[in-house]
Image (cartoon, rainbow, N blue to C red; front, side, top):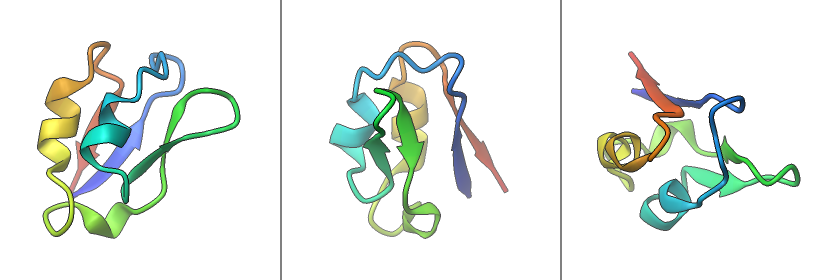
Length: 62
């Protein structure tokens, strides 16, 4: 699965970064961005990051 962050929805809370620091980071604009698409299922539970996002800014694509 490949995670995507909707920058319009993202509030930059950082929950995804705390859960998956090798997949997400907070960019210079204060919003989350994907830095490691290939970490889902290996080093990161991307579904948990998606489910934990308070504004549903993360989606997962096959």
